[in-house]
Length: 86
Image (spheres, rainbow, N blue to C red):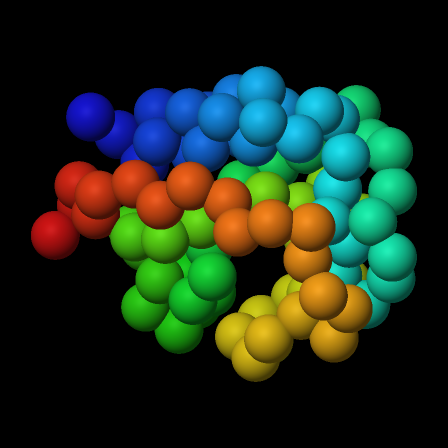
């Protein structure tokens, strides 16, 4: 299965468990209808597959290629899906 498939499943699982709430990155959790699955290790740094976290597009952009921990504590850890690209 493709990376896109696993990212879509991660977002669906997050929404089912937490609703349409972004855990925030550099800001407090907030409602968002535009959630995305973000690679914990940025793709530009070898994070093609593996663990993802759910963020809204704005927080995903704010995070950029940083791979350090979220400066604001997340609501909950999102689901991890197998690395299907290795």
